[in-house]
Length: 459
Image (cartoon, rainbow, N blue to C red):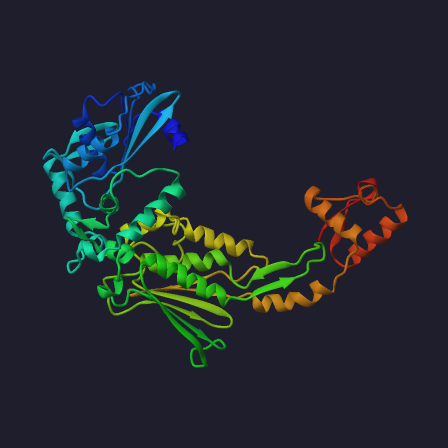
């Protein structure tokens, strides 16, 4: 957190950054917070001059709480900032983080403000009305769950979420658990939102009967064959992801092979394991929860795994550009999951899935995406078949300790000469020649260069 503040201080004021030398104008801090919430969010650093010099501020026992209350009590809908105090070069500074919210437009002292460049200005009536229209058409997960009350939220779980967030982000959250839920979009006007129930509810299926993950395992590669097992994973979205991910990985084969240039065995999962968790999380995060007649489904076959979730691709997103485009049907759910590292809020998940497939030792077939107006599916493919093809020839290759050591040398240096083989193995030139010729015959290394420039690289 201290490093983060130092980086901010080194910057200039902008559309998302404001410096305040002290707390002498608390009303102005509230107005700036309002402008950030109505735009892209931002940070107010108190104890720093307009020029970026750290001047410090006096921080008492009640300072943070009073500042937080000042913002909350004078904004509508209420804005719940994340406030922390850090010591920079012996001087205390206060960092006030304000998120962009789905509840905009906000007002401060009855007036609405907007951020334009590095200036906070009064919002025009036309701008206010446009934001108001957007709020009325807000995402389903940010809407109030009409039949639910605050007693339907599991506040014990909320506190555990806060602890996990503080640990992962190395920060301390000021305010109450209820205040945090309001700032995240889980509570609005003293009532839980749909996202609040799905993420923090005691019994989400009471309000969303099909908000669960169904997993079916089949013997063979067709639905018509014997079904080995069927499980439903319910509860809060965090629990669904964790439990479904654990179950799938318990039934994924992990294969071992002995590489010709390694002493230890190499364990290879039949599917890229990060991809499995990411696809489960994506299905939960991006499904259409307004569609009550369907659920997330995972089908596990011998040679592939299929993930289905209700809700087609958003406008402008296709199976070809999904890795490059960022979208979220459920912005509140996505934001909360990203806070505790369940999902990449910046939309990097698909990049990581594709990279993991490229880096997998057996180079699995790339995922296939299917989508229509109502559903979205992803199919990933097992590598068991490829493993069986490679297994026999790989395990039949035997190397002596000198050859294994030489292979490690080539991996590190990129090449090896016969003279270098003699030196690292402490053997005669005759023994070195026998070992090197054997490695060539087994197809592990190949000769490069001519005359004195002859050397060997991995084939």
